[in-house]
Length: 169
Image 1 (cartoon, rainbow, N blue to C red):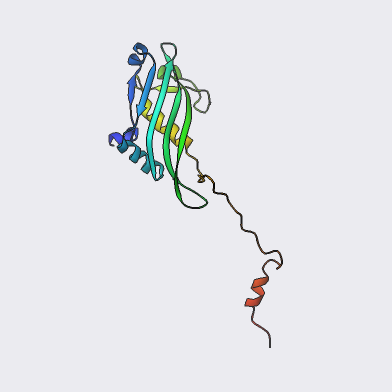
Image 2: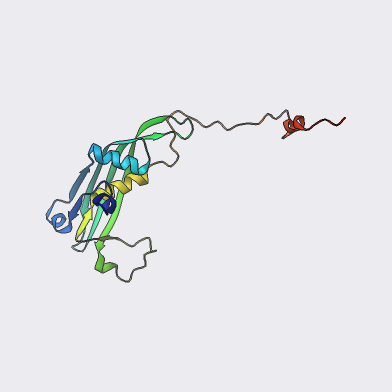
């Protein structure tokens, strides 16, 4: 397994020891190559200017991570099938704790914190995950509206099929 397969194309692990000694601010700026790899992973035409800005706080065994992930994302309009670019901004609010504190917790519980793995929190992975959460599954180019197909109401449904029936002699 390659590093990309294990962590994804954007990885910025930061040790919790370093977080404790820092001012708690972390910024992740994706390179053009990382943006291209994420665009391929997420099946969108392009991603650029991807930045995650985070602030951490909390007691010694847990960290609250709050911030914003922003980018310019190219997508394909589901109505016109035209590519377009638009801004994306997704808020982040996560709680991380030591894996020892997760023993005995129910994984189905929505309030279970994310684990601190190997003494590190990967802010690149957080950036990529919240970028994915912010993508519109049915993107629509600004100004494009969906016009549903309306059947001709003067003719009864399936009337055109009558003309396909062979005439009886």
